[in-house]
Amino acid sequence: MAEGKDSSESGSGTRSSRAGCARSGLLGLAAILIVVYLFTRAGDGNGEDDVDHSATLTTEPRVTTTLADRPGAVEPVCPDEDGESRHTLMFTEAPPMCIDVDATYVATVETNRGDFEITLDPEGAPEAVNSFVFLARWGFYDGVGFNRVLRDYLAQAGDPFDPNIGDADAGYVLPEEPPAERPYYPVGSVSMASLYPEPDSTGSEFFVATGPEAERLLPLGYSRIGRVADGMNVVDAINATANPNDDIGVPNDPTVIATVTVEEQ
Image 1 (cartoon, rainbow, N blue to C red):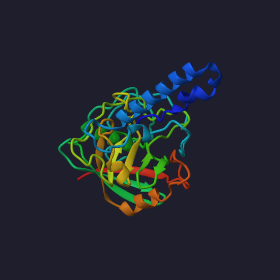
Image 2 (image 1 turned 180 degrees about the vertical axis):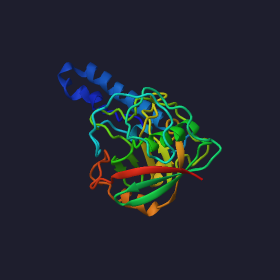
Image 3 (image 1 turned 135 degrees about the vertical axis):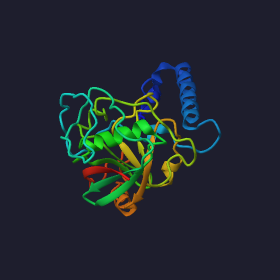
Image 4 (image 1 turned 90 degrees about the vertical axis):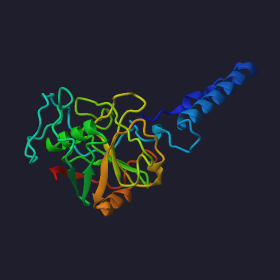
């Protein structure tokens, strides 16, 4: 998801108030142009009230449970389907296609608040689903926390490394595979995060849409990989950990993923 940028630098007029009216006028004009630009970026050109992607990821300190140093990268090979492959966190490149895109896969996310199941959609986002299954079966998500929870908006997880680094990937990134139909991110849908507007930046983090704010997101940067088919009450419990006084999304009480198992149906 896109990095949140602090626009306070455009308020430098307070530091240069002694420079005269001419400079103040130029600063005022610049501020107006910035506001117009940001307003334009927030929509998709059709006049509808959509959400700016810059609200969906931040490189501010986030909650994680592993804080692992990045290990040496290994060549990606398809993991064991039973999830018994050795816990691995870094790869030299994107994985080969390890799933059958015509099959149905169900991922069970086990957490300290209970379990929920995701029915994956390989047809809609084959590369992203393949990567999610690949990482899950290598144990990448084991012990990782939901680092960003915004009430009635989203719950995000999938970064096992030091949250101050801000690189949420496993040594590779993928092109985005955005959904084609509205609502792009309905409540209960699961999507991969990215560093929008940077292209081809889908990493390891994923988010569950927990409320109507997510339904207003534009589809430009996030591959929708499936939907919660069971255990939405657990997702609701994660949603309830949001801190209303923290707009970054650091939850009051972190939810920890024990493991993610994936079965072909």
